[in-house]
Image (cartoon, rainbow, N blue to C red):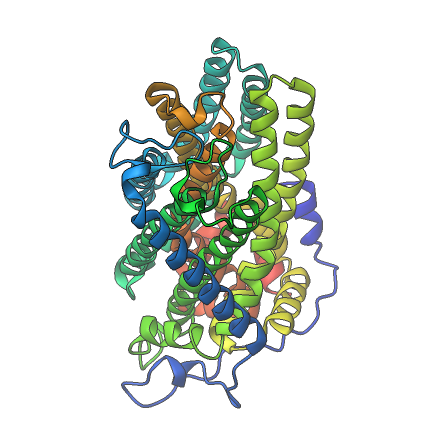
Amino acid sequence: MSGQAASYYDPNQGFAQVPERAPPPPQQQGYNFDDAFKIEKPKFNDLWAGLLLIAVFLGYAAVSGLTIHKYASHKSFSGGGIYDSANDFSLNTNTLVLFVFVLCVALVLSWLYFLGARYFTKTFIWVTGILNIVFALATGIYYLARKQYGGGIVFLLFGIFAIICFISWIPRIPFTAFMLQTTMDVARGYGHVFLVSALGGIFTVAFAAWFSVTLVAIYVAYEPDSSGVNPSCQNGGCSNAKVIGLVVYVTFAMYWFSEWIKNTVHTTIAGVYGSWYFWSKSAGGMPKGSTRGAFRRATTYSFGSISLGSLIIAFINMLRQACSVAQRHEAAEGNIVGSIFIWILGCFISLLDWLVTIFNRYAFCHIALYGKAYVPAAKDTWKMMQDRGIDALVQDCLIGPVLTMGSMFVSYVCALLAYLYLQFTKPAYNADGDFTAVIMAFAFVIGLQVCQVFMTPIGSGVETIFVAMGWDPQVMINDHPDIYYKLVQLYPRVQQAIHA
């Protein structure tokens, strides 16, 4: 345990009274999720954020419909496959085929990674760390061999950083493996956790496919060509500014909507694990329809709150995407200093993303069970975690870093696939490598988002258990003694925190 974690468990420390507790179990049989976690005065929280998300999505659909129509009207110009395009100045069907390959790879690897977590819990953590190290170092060496020195040095630095992180993980792996095994055991016996994960992942893949077609269609419809051969531009209206503006808009919409999907899955699963924690050993048993009830609340009263939290992450992801494109561009140009500088800036943005994501996910656990607005839920949950010392527990649990590293592995494979595809197919529009950085960045994003949605239910289980322990630790002791005593054995100071 880290010294920081130990400081949180000072037995002389005063802890604030935590007001949120689960309501007493309903006495009647057949009670549902809404009965178990009743909202006294239900209302649609943060409605403005939900309406804004709908407006942005409708705008995305309008842009997509218009550009895909233009793409379809001149499909012969962009080609019907990999090599038959007359379009030598912008993304075309060659790129679309690449994104299909990227989606297939992201889907298969994400599902295999999920199955690894389900069936090989402890091995899964070790394999994740080792694969990231090996892949980062191998990719760096490959780039250096291809004389892409900027990208090669960046990946080697990433590999060294991954080695340092993994070594610091080793003492905490038993504790993390136990928490992961607990969530898997609950998932097998209660609710529809695996089904929600599969549906969320498939829905994300479908949306990513739509985004890929839209992205290519924007370039086909509005990318100007100095020779004037783009049939979509015969009546004017094409410009680089329009392409950049539309790409930025649809990318932001993609980030926001995919984050909303991920957080809706998370909130739904948090409702299932909250039901298990508080009611699985009660006289009435688990509430009926916990998964449906949690999903219904997430998409009605809490729709705006989830949209607001997702909006914050979407903005940060846009900044990280800009850094990713810039870093790859500098690496392709051979600017080692610029590439490393932008990589460092991207690391700081990734750290901000990690902090805000943790803040979000634990707030959504509160929202799932108690239906509060986003800001009050976030404040209450974070204060409770600090008062109870649960934040130290969170820091010493590796579930978040493991799942992030796994998602990064999938995204790096997708980015490498994009790079190799461009090298071997040699599309005319990328003869000078101008589009390599952009295409690799979007392949990276697709792989990252797909894998994160697939893996969301695993992290949701651990996070909900931690938050529920903070709200009412006595339930853990009375109703789940086997888990509690094993947890104390692996992490002894936890008993001081939850008894405070």
